[in-house]
Length: 244
Length: 304
Image (cartoon, rainbow over all chains, first blue to last red; front, top):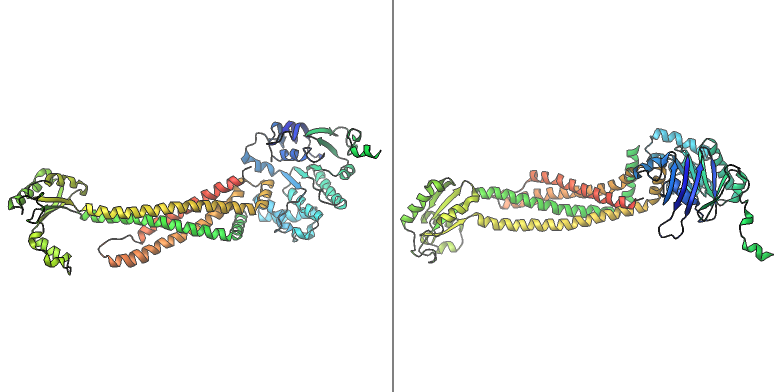
């Protein structure tokens, strides 16, 4: 489904590569957490999967498309099979919840009959059936993120990419979003989520890929999930030394 | 659905940038009016050329007693001169160029002069003898006047050979210069309107960058993203070029036909049918330029 092999990505003007020789396989129906500090390469990896970036070296295959060689006119059609959610929601403030979700389908040229059926359905799925006529600024952060998720999945993508979707939310709200993502995952959608949120990762017990400095530090693919940060002994925490 | 969406996007974009849109309309309107005026001038020149060149004749002026002595040392042309000139015009080598000719004697020249300068004091002082006797030659091909000039210039008793078109050419070159000036102004204004369109489209794209970002994210095709912006420029420019078309037609109807044609009844002027040829060209030009300008602008802006 997603196959990344020996990918190195160096941004223009940067001395160190953002990703350095990264290889990763994600199967259909997987739920994968990408964890790591800021600048560890989580977002770069997501951007490669969405073909927002092209790797400097290595190969990226997503849904059978070779994303290194795909001609740019085909990129939009590839992206229709992928849903994306961001930390900052990225809703259109002058459109209602319904219109925000319908916008995706409108720009893809779907018929209004299809839209008036698909949008309420997906809003019910994310639990916003009653709030279809509200504007984003009238909603809580959690509900805004639900709108964003609804927009991402309304076209029934095979893969949902989420870049810190709970980064702006309190723990209780985050839990709500996470159970929504789990629900989506259970319908067969592959979910790849980058996050800082240790509590969430601990609770869900899914596959964890940890990145640091552009390398994959660990990938709990076969052994299954153990703990968000099992290698604490290897991580230097300067404060601890000072307290002793 | 798609059309409805595109249409909504366009009206939104136009409303958001209303002052820029108005300036696009005004600049295209003015520049295309200049283009149209230049076109009309060219059409007018063409029309006058066919009209006047058809009527233009070559004059062979014979010597008079008052002619300058270097051209006419013998003074008044003798009847022999007239017979010689007439014979030459009948000669097969020249006759093949000549459509017809006639002789104008002192009396006829005097009557014509009196009529032309009626009321002018000069008419009182001129005498028959001062006015040249003239052979008026109409050519089959007006471009071949050099043949007549070569044959008769320098012949004793002939003062001068003059192609009437040399007078007309001066008028035409003035009109030509005017139309070139109009084209020059139009080109500068068209350039500024192209720049204005691309700036406006960029502003419009910037104010809708959220929408564009989401469109790209969910996989809208580039063409579909660009279309509303391109059409935005095209709509504004179309309004401007239609206004220019109205202005050009108004110019023909009220200034050329309503004013000039009334005052100069003997001249044929451009009319609405010429305008009907120019106006569609203006609209096409405006639409093409706007489409190109906004297309290039938005493509640069949306480059991945």
